[in-house]
Length: 87
Image (cartoon, rainbow, N blue to C red; front, side, top):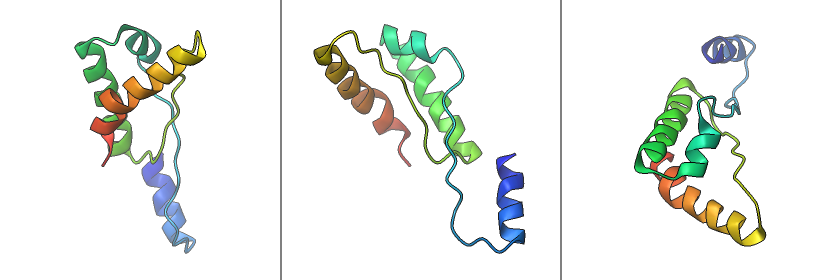
């Protein structure tokens, strides 16, 4: 569908790139909570697959049982997952 949207955009003369947001589908919540190396690999693979499909940005719901835990989770996600997905 992304490919179709890009073709249609070109046909109508759109020159600006499409901005496409899709959230991850797989066991993202479980992976975010476990923080194992296997979970990190799963998340990186899933986000890379989305990027390869043409997704330009995505959402993530990080656990936030407290402000401190949320800050820790954002830091962890940025270092362990997002930095490995950036292209």
